[in-house]
Image: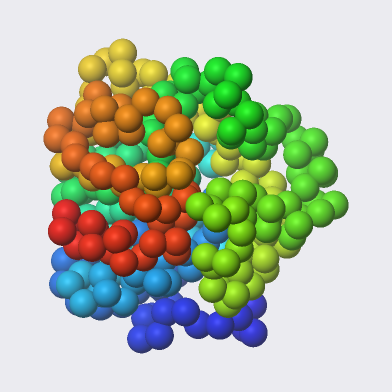
Length: 297
């Protein structure tokens, strides 16, 4: 991947050792630590348009989740290595390796699912939490009527037992990636993405081991992650740190019940707002996204 563009000038490349190998991150700026966790089907590169302005106020850490980008991609079965609880532990280990015991946290898409699980499992380390364009996993599955199932068909498709989705995607991996990215934007095209960022996403998604990792991520979402959410709800546990919910006005959560109303049922203190965007807020509307994050954090 040496020929891929560096979209984080002035940031260091750092690696942290975890049980399954290494977790990669870009680190830059100064001030209180702020961890950024990307979503599917992307890598840490999705933050490239807002990392620099955030780094003027914070020490920004943009990580690659296990199985994504340049982090290790363990083989797994039935989502065991890709539950959000396990991925959250990677994030905590990374931040501790960098010397940060407490930090602010923002996640998008799958990264937001890791982020709120981290806040539930490790409430003492999270000072404030921002979740971008999601509602909790249990809420998504509860609301899976016909319209929602068609809208998010990939939830059930990627969660099918191996090797079915891996086999089907691998035949047209880049075409499937580009179709998915375009179909979730406001204008249903790839225009919102920097061509250099797209090169990163194509390189990542062209690796069969990482296609498998993505499928395992969604298998965990359909089983392990959903069960953990339901257990927390039953036990009355709530997200303790202040929470900001941002969602695209034309994104997936906007099609259902108010995302802010949903999050208020999960967090002790929640506020939020829609951003003029599709699903990919940091790349489709970086100015509004960074303004909202700076105001909150």
